[in-house]
Image 1: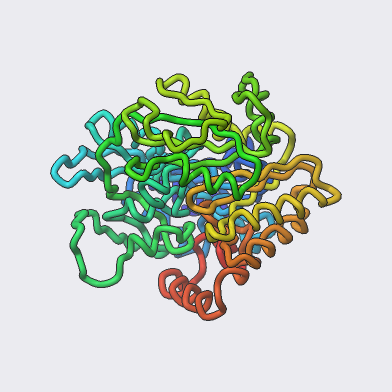
Image 2 (image 1 turned 135 degrees about the vertical axis):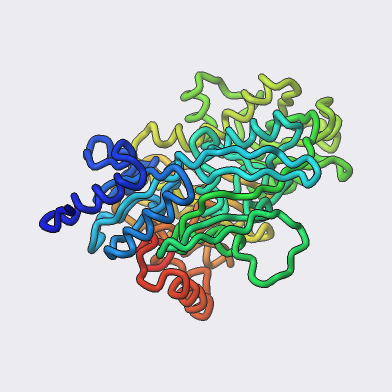
Length: 457
């Protein structure tokens, strides 16, 4: 008999019957990793954590939660930085956290179409290795590859370091499976490139941040490997010079795979964290990282001037060393304390001016002790890391987002809106757009049980 006097226990018992008691967590110590995000800035409370092992499990869990009116927070690898995958601390009713990590199946690579179907809980690294072992390449890559899940990267339309070569996650999706709040399963995994039969539900679910349903499987587009590449670190004195280097250093016939920029503070912190010294002959305010597909002989960088301060990595180990300065940024700042991590984008023609103004704003902020401005140079994506302000002090965050909006930019480039930026969505979306998005949310989740508080304030 259900424990009607204790509805939480009754729900736990019902979900245990679906997924097995070992996959329903109610012990606060076991739940801790699911209710606080990677940055340690966003945390909340949950009734319990449930870990379904199949799409049918997910559907049954959502039907049970819907029947009881219990909100659900979908969660993948929990590597997000905007509070979108952890429950809100001020929630009116505690939610269930639904972890997709057990949905980690890797389907056989289809060599005819260059596609593969994978479970939402498969990590980005596992999918990359799976594709590579079959002679293919998956086009999305980012520093959290060992923990970030495919479902999470789809839910946030993740970007990463190879957007200039392959595009955002949305461009990799050719089919999707998801479960709506009432347990309805949507499955369209055929992967046909020409399929003009109405709305593209996969594209709609991509970037929805768990507000429309739980993604359970994705059909992914794969790419032919790019071959051997070369990586260069080049000193730059300004963002304007960094942007010029991106085009002038690389021959027009050479394919650009990545273009990143890191400031001097970030280079120092990442180097110290990894036990590495300064990589160039001279000190520079900025260091540009370029990766090109040129057969691994550095011929792609013949556009560099004779006086350029540059180091080029040709073999795998040297390239990994050069990349570690850029990929160590997030970890390096987090080692100093609870960091404010903002991810924004601006049109490329405005990137230099906006980045300079952001440095002026953050550098003069009285409570900021350390900060870095770095990011994905080729697609106008700036990351701002700040140490000093209290975790719940949003004043400097707002100043950064308002600055970006003045340049016609976006308050979120690749991490999503989450809870952190829901109140600032209006800075880059018109009232008409927000109304249209709310209408879609209401149609798919009329009771509002899916990830409440995310995306919309």
